[in-house]
Amino acid sequence: MTTFGIIFYQLLNFFLLIAVGFVAAKKKVISQDGMHTLAKLFTSVLLPCFFFITLYRAFTWQELLGVAPMLVITFCIYAFYAILFAVLSVVFKVHKKRRKVFQAMFAFINIPAIGFPLIGVLYPDAIGVYIPAITLVDSLLVWTYGVWLTTDTEKTGKKAKFNPKRLINPVTVMVILALIVTLADIHVPKLILNPITALSKASNPVCMLYLGALIASTDLKKIFSYKEIYLGIGIKMLLFPLLMAPLFKSLPISHEMVNVSLILASLPAMSSLPVLVKENGTQVEFATSGTLVTTLASVVTMSIVAYFGMI
Image (cartoon, rainbow, N blue to C red; front, top):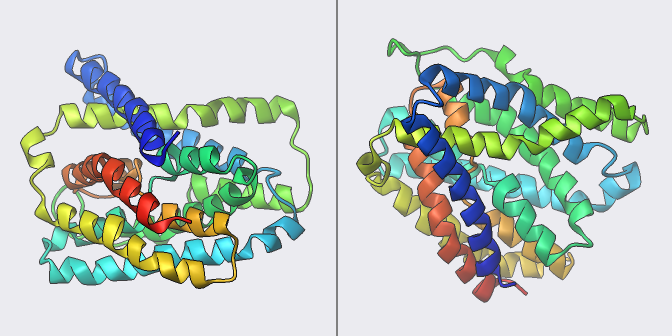
Protein backbone atom coordinates (compact mmCIF):
# COMPACT_ATOMS: atom_id res chain seq x y z
CA MET A 1 0.00 0.00 0.00
CA THR A 2 1.30 3.48 -0.90
CA THR A 3 1.78 6.29 1.61
CA PHE A 4 -1.26 7.97 0.07
CA GLY A 5 -3.31 4.79 0.51
CA ILE A 6 -2.25 4.30 4.13
CA ILE A 7 -3.05 7.89 5.09
CA PHE A 8 -6.34 7.83 3.17
CA TYR A 9 -7.41 4.61 4.92
CA GLN A 10 -6.57 6.06 8.34
CA LEU A 11 -8.47 9.23 7.49
CA LEU A 12 -11.54 7.20 6.56
CA ASN A 13 -11.48 5.60 10.01
CA PHE A 14 -10.80 9.02 11.53
CA PHE A 15 -13.74 10.75 9.86
CA LEU A 16 -16.21 7.87 10.21
CA LEU A 17 -15.76 8.01 13.98
CA ILE A 18 -16.07 11.79 13.88
CA ALA A 19 -19.29 11.40 11.86
CA VAL A 20 -20.72 9.10 14.54
CA GLY A 21 -19.95 11.72 17.20
CA PHE A 22 -21.44 14.46 15.00
CA VAL A 23 -24.71 12.58 14.47
CA ALA A 24 -24.88 11.53 18.13
CA ALA A 25 -24.59 15.18 19.19
CA LYS A 26 -27.17 16.36 16.66
CA LYS A 27 -29.56 13.66 17.90
CA LYS A 28 -28.88 14.76 21.51
CA VAL A 29 -27.36 11.38 22.38
CA ILE A 30 -24.24 13.32 23.40
CA SER A 31 -25.23 16.45 25.33
CA GLN A 32 -23.02 19.38 26.37
CA ASP A 33 -22.58 17.70 29.75
CA GLY A 34 -21.80 14.46 27.94
CA MET A 35 -19.08 16.19 25.91
CA HIS A 36 -17.50 17.46 29.11
CA THR A 37 -17.59 13.92 30.51
CA LEU A 38 -15.98 12.49 27.35
CA ALA A 39 -13.20 15.09 27.52
CA LYS A 40 -12.50 14.29 31.17
CA LEU A 41 -12.62 10.54 30.51
CA PHE A 42 -10.17 10.91 27.62
CA THR A 43 -7.59 13.10 29.38
CA SER A 44 -7.82 11.56 32.86
CA VAL A 45 -8.29 7.84 32.15
CA LEU A 46 -8.02 6.62 28.55
CA LEU A 47 -4.99 8.56 27.31
CA PRO A 48 -2.88 7.82 30.41
CA CYS A 49 -3.67 4.12 29.87
CA PHE A 50 -2.68 4.41 26.19
CA PHE A 51 0.73 5.88 27.03
CA PHE A 52 1.34 3.35 29.79
CA ILE A 53 0.63 0.37 27.51
CA THR A 54 2.72 1.86 24.68
CA LEU A 55 5.75 2.27 26.94
CA TYR A 56 5.35 -0.72 29.29
CA ARG A 57 8.13 -3.28 28.71
CA ALA A 58 8.74 -1.78 25.26
CA PHE A 59 12.51 -1.48 25.71
CA THR A 60 15.49 -2.24 27.91
CA TRP A 61 18.25 0.18 28.96
CA GLN A 62 20.36 -1.07 26.04
CA GLU A 63 17.54 -0.63 23.53
CA LEU A 64 16.78 2.84 24.88
CA LEU A 65 20.41 3.83 24.33
CA GLY A 66 20.23 2.27 20.86
CA VAL A 67 17.38 4.58 19.82
CA ALA A 68 19.02 7.65 21.38
CA PRO A 69 19.32 9.27 17.90
CA MET A 70 15.54 8.87 17.44
CA LEU A 71 14.92 10.45 20.84
CA VAL A 72 17.17 13.40 19.97
CA ILE A 73 15.72 13.86 16.47
CA THR A 74 12.13 13.71 17.77
CA PHE A 75 12.88 16.29 20.45
CA CYS A 76 14.64 18.56 17.95
CA ILE A 77 11.70 18.39 15.50
CA TYR A 78 9.25 19.35 18.25
CA ALA A 79 11.51 22.12 19.57
CA PHE A 80 12.19 23.53 16.09
CA TYR A 81 8.51 23.78 15.17
CA ALA A 82 7.60 25.21 18.59
CA ILE A 83 10.13 28.03 18.14
CA LEU A 84 9.34 28.54 14.44
CA PHE A 85 5.60 28.90 14.99
CA ALA A 86 6.04 31.09 18.04
CA VAL A 87 7.80 33.50 15.66
CA LEU A 88 5.36 32.95 12.77
CA SER A 89 2.37 33.60 15.03
CA VAL A 90 3.68 37.17 15.29
CA VAL A 91 4.75 37.43 11.63
CA PHE A 92 1.33 36.20 10.44
CA LYS A 93 -0.36 38.57 12.91
CA VAL A 94 -2.36 35.77 14.50
CA HIS A 95 -4.81 37.12 17.07
CA LYS A 96 -3.10 37.28 20.46
CA LYS A 97 -5.67 34.95 22.05
CA ARG A 98 -4.91 32.30 19.42
CA ARG A 99 -1.12 32.54 19.24
CA LYS A 100 -0.23 29.84 21.76
CA VAL A 101 -2.82 27.44 20.32
CA PHE A 102 -1.43 28.17 16.82
CA GLN A 103 2.01 27.23 18.13
CA ALA A 104 0.69 24.01 19.71
CA MET A 105 -1.21 23.18 16.52
CA PHE A 106 1.98 22.94 14.46
CA ALA A 107 4.42 21.85 17.15
CA PHE A 108 2.53 18.74 18.30
CA ILE A 109 1.50 16.00 15.91
CA ASN A 110 -1.05 13.25 15.36
CA ILE A 111 1.02 10.28 16.45
CA PRO A 112 -1.66 7.68 17.40
CA ALA A 113 -4.12 8.02 14.50
CA ILE A 114 -1.74 8.59 11.56
CA GLY A 115 1.92 8.42 12.65
CA PHE A 116 1.95 4.98 14.28
CA PRO A 117 -0.12 3.18 11.60
CA LEU A 118 2.04 4.68 8.83
CA ILE A 119 5.32 3.71 10.52
CA GLY A 120 3.88 0.28 11.36
CA VAL A 121 2.97 -0.51 7.76
CA LEU A 122 6.21 0.83 6.29
CA TYR A 123 8.51 -0.71 8.92
CA PRO A 124 6.69 -3.50 10.82
CA ASP A 125 9.94 -4.93 12.21
CA ALA A 126 11.11 -1.59 13.58
CA ILE A 127 7.85 -0.31 15.05
CA GLY A 128 8.61 -1.79 18.47
CA VAL A 129 11.84 0.21 18.58
CA TYR A 130 10.78 3.62 17.27
CA ILE A 131 7.24 3.95 18.67
CA PRO A 132 8.24 3.88 22.38
CA ALA A 133 11.03 6.42 21.77
CA ILE A 134 8.69 8.78 19.92
CA THR A 135 5.91 8.27 22.48
CA LEU A 136 8.25 9.09 25.35
CA VAL A 137 9.22 12.46 23.88
CA ASP A 138 5.71 13.25 22.61
CA SER A 139 3.88 12.48 25.85
CA LEU A 140 6.25 14.40 28.10
CA LEU A 141 6.36 17.49 25.86
CA VAL A 142 2.63 17.62 25.06
CA TRP A 143 1.53 17.14 28.64
CA THR A 144 3.93 19.70 30.06
CA TYR A 145 4.72 22.41 27.50
CA GLY A 146 1.57 21.61 25.52
CA VAL A 147 -0.61 22.09 28.61
CA TRP A 148 0.98 25.51 29.11
CA LEU A 149 0.40 26.49 25.47
CA THR A 150 -3.28 25.53 25.60
CA THR A 151 -3.91 27.40 28.85
CA ASP A 152 -5.35 30.65 27.59
CA THR A 153 -8.09 32.53 29.42
CA GLU A 154 -10.87 31.75 31.83
CA LYS A 155 -14.48 31.72 30.66
CA THR A 156 -14.88 35.18 32.20
CA GLY A 157 -12.31 36.55 29.76
CA LYS A 158 -9.85 37.36 32.51
CA LYS A 159 -6.28 36.28 32.00
CA ALA A 160 -5.59 32.98 33.72
CA LYS A 161 -2.42 32.39 35.68
CA PHE A 162 -0.76 29.14 34.70
CA ASN A 163 -0.71 26.70 37.59
CA PRO A 164 2.48 24.57 37.55
CA LYS A 165 0.49 21.82 39.27
CA ARG A 166 -1.14 21.14 35.89
CA LEU A 167 2.15 19.64 34.76
CA ILE A 168 1.52 16.84 37.26
CA ASN A 169 -1.40 15.20 35.51
CA PRO A 170 -2.57 11.61 34.89
CA VAL A 171 -0.59 11.35 31.63
CA THR A 172 2.77 12.47 33.03
CA VAL A 173 2.24 10.27 36.10
CA MET A 174 1.50 7.18 33.98
CA VAL A 175 4.42 7.87 31.61
CA ILE A 176 6.85 8.14 34.53
CA LEU A 177 5.33 5.04 36.13
CA ALA A 178 5.68 3.10 32.86
CA LEU A 179 9.34 4.13 32.61
CA ILE A 180 10.04 3.04 36.18
CA VAL A 181 8.44 -0.40 35.90
CA THR A 182 9.96 -0.98 32.44
CA LEU A 183 13.53 0.03 33.22
CA ALA A 184 13.38 -1.70 36.61
CA ASP A 185 12.03 -4.84 34.87
CA ILE A 186 8.95 -5.00 37.11
CA HIS A 187 6.13 -7.22 35.85
CA VAL A 188 2.62 -5.82 36.26
CA PRO A 189 0.08 -8.61 37.03
CA LYS A 190 -2.35 -9.42 34.22
CA LEU A 191 -5.23 -8.69 36.58
CA ILE A 192 -4.13 -5.03 36.49
CA LEU A 193 -2.62 -4.94 32.99
CA ASN A 194 -5.63 -6.32 31.10
CA PRO A 195 -8.08 -3.56 32.15
CA ILE A 196 -5.45 -0.90 31.37
CA THR A 197 -4.95 -2.44 27.92
CA ALA A 198 -8.70 -2.47 27.27
CA LEU A 199 -9.04 1.17 28.31
CA SER A 200 -6.06 2.20 26.16
CA LYS A 201 -7.79 0.86 23.03
CA ALA A 202 -10.75 3.17 23.65
CA SER A 203 -8.67 6.37 23.71
CA ASN A 204 -8.69 7.13 19.98
CA PRO A 205 -12.39 6.30 19.33
CA VAL A 206 -13.53 8.39 22.30
CA CYS A 207 -11.39 11.32 21.13
CA MET A 208 -12.93 11.10 17.64
CA LEU A 209 -16.47 10.93 19.08
CA TYR A 210 -15.72 14.03 21.12
CA LEU A 211 -14.37 15.84 18.05
CA GLY A 212 -17.52 14.97 16.10
CA ALA A 213 -19.74 16.25 18.91
CA LEU A 214 -17.64 19.41 19.09
CA ILE A 215 -18.03 20.04 15.35
CA ALA A 216 -21.80 19.61 15.70
CA SER A 217 -21.87 22.61 18.04
CA THR A 218 -19.48 24.70 15.90
CA ASP A 219 -20.11 27.01 12.94
CA LEU A 220 -18.76 24.94 10.02
CA LYS A 221 -18.06 28.04 7.92
CA LYS A 222 -15.71 29.36 10.59
CA ILE A 223 -13.81 26.08 10.75
CA PHE A 224 -12.44 26.64 7.24
CA SER A 225 -11.98 30.41 7.56
CA TYR A 226 -8.66 30.71 9.44
CA LYS A 227 -6.08 31.79 6.84
CA GLU A 228 -3.12 31.31 9.19
CA ILE A 229 -3.83 27.57 9.32
CA TYR A 230 -3.37 27.24 5.55
CA LEU A 231 -0.11 29.20 5.72
CA GLY A 232 1.03 26.91 8.54
CA ILE A 233 0.21 23.81 6.50
CA GLY A 234 2.32 24.98 3.57
CA ILE A 235 5.29 25.74 5.81
CA LYS A 236 5.17 22.91 8.36
CA MET A 237 3.69 20.02 6.40
CA LEU A 238 5.31 20.63 3.02
CA LEU A 239 8.15 23.18 2.82
CA PHE A 240 10.20 22.32 5.90
CA PRO A 241 9.92 18.50 5.65
CA LEU A 242 11.32 18.75 2.10
CA LEU A 243 14.08 21.08 3.33
CA MET A 244 14.84 18.72 6.22
CA ALA A 245 15.16 15.65 3.97
CA PRO A 246 18.77 16.37 2.85
CA LEU A 247 19.72 17.12 6.46
CA PHE A 248 18.32 13.82 7.75
CA LYS A 249 20.00 11.93 4.89
CA SER A 250 23.36 13.47 5.79
CA LEU A 251 23.17 12.17 9.37
CA PRO A 252 24.84 8.85 10.32
CA ILE A 253 21.49 7.09 10.81
CA SER A 254 19.67 4.27 9.02
CA HIS A 255 17.36 4.80 6.04
CA GLU A 256 14.46 3.72 8.24
CA MET A 257 15.24 6.43 10.78
CA VAL A 258 15.52 9.04 8.02
CA ASN A 259 12.05 8.18 6.73
CA VAL A 260 10.50 7.96 10.21
CA SER A 261 11.95 11.40 10.96
CA LEU A 262 10.37 12.78 7.78
CA ILE A 263 7.02 11.29 8.76
CA LEU A 264 7.24 13.02 12.15
CA ALA A 265 8.21 16.32 10.52
CA SER A 266 5.17 16.30 8.21
CA LEU A 267 2.32 14.95 10.39
CA PRO A 268 -0.86 17.02 10.96
CA ALA A 269 -2.01 18.51 14.27
CA MET A 270 -2.69 16.11 17.12
CA SER A 271 -6.31 14.94 17.34
CA SER A 272 -6.42 15.65 21.08
CA LEU A 273 -5.67 19.39 20.64
CA PRO A 274 -9.34 20.48 20.90
CA VAL A 275 -9.73 18.37 24.05
CA LEU A 276 -6.71 20.01 25.67
CA VAL A 277 -7.91 23.48 24.69
CA LYS A 278 -11.42 22.73 25.96
CA GLU A 279 -9.95 21.69 29.31
CA ASN A 280 -7.51 24.59 29.67
CA GLY A 281 -8.60 27.52 27.50
CA THR A 282 -11.22 29.06 25.23
CA GLN A 283 -10.00 28.78 21.61
CA VAL A 284 -11.80 25.48 20.99
CA GLU A 285 -13.20 26.41 17.58
CA PHE A 286 -9.73 27.42 16.33
CA ALA A 287 -8.19 24.21 17.70
CA THR A 288 -10.92 22.10 16.08
CA SER A 289 -10.35 23.86 12.77
CA GLY A 290 -6.61 23.20 12.97
CA THR A 291 -7.07 19.51 13.67
CA LEU A 292 -9.58 18.96 10.85
CA VAL A 293 -7.95 21.10 8.15
CA THR A 294 -4.39 19.86 8.74
CA THR A 295 -5.62 16.25 8.79
CA LEU A 296 -7.45 16.68 5.48
CA ALA A 297 -4.41 18.38 3.93
CA SER A 298 -2.07 15.61 5.10
CA VAL A 299 -3.39 13.21 2.44
CA VAL A 300 -1.75 15.40 -0.21
CA THR A 301 1.18 16.93 1.68
CA MET A 302 2.49 13.67 3.18
CA SER A 303 2.25 11.92 -0.17
CA ILE A 304 4.37 14.69 -1.74
CA VAL A 305 6.92 14.52 1.09
CA ALA A 306 7.09 10.73 0.78
CA TYR A 307 7.62 10.89 -2.99
CA PHE A 308 10.27 13.62 -3.05
CA GLY A 309 11.89 13.29 0.38
CA MET A 310 12.00 9.67 1.49
CA ILE A 311 14.73 7.21 0.62
